[in-house]
Each structure stands twice: as C-alpha cells, then as structure tokens.
Length: 123
Image (cartoon, rainbow, N blue to C red; front, side):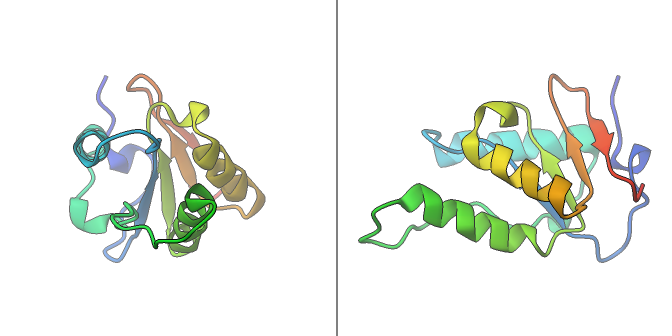
C-alpha cells in the first residue's frame, strides 16, 4: 500500500523536511538512492528537503562521525518534520536524532519496509 505525505501531515508551502538515514560506509550514490526512494514512497517534493548530506568533512578531526552528527542535528533543528528512512534503527546517529525528536517534540515518521508510521502529537 502506497502512502502519500498527505496521509500524515497537511502540507505547508514552506515546509522543511529532514531525512535521517544511515550513511556510514555508503557511497554518495547509495545515500541518494535511499533519499529518492523515501521521496517517491512518501510523495515528497525534493525541493522540500533539507540538504543534510555532508559532502565534505573538515581535515584534522579526531572524530569526524561526531562532527557529522553535530552538523546533522544543527540542520534538523530547522525541520518541520523528520523522516527516518529504512534501516535507521541500526545506525547510531539516526538513533540519537530519533531521541532528539522525542525529547524536543519534533514531528517524525519512521519508515521500515515501506510501512511509514507517524509519531507526533501535532498531526
């Protein structure tokens, strides 16, 4: 059964959507493929997405994964909705982002096996 974005939330013209997805060890092609699948499954315009795919990491970091997570959290703070892409439960950063959504009442949708599940008191 295909779900549309509108099945979960009323679309606003200025809505910003953040996709939380596993990225560690994946190529840019694999990351973008997942993002495109999420957009297609949820019928989301790509223009509504926050571009949170980090393309360049500063040199000289001891823990570049923490830097990437911090940058993602900073961008997630501007989102009206967070979508957790399939596989998110097995990624540390996604689990931290999920905890932040719960603690700070950020509306979010979990996706696993093409079955989105809404979690928010605002919908």
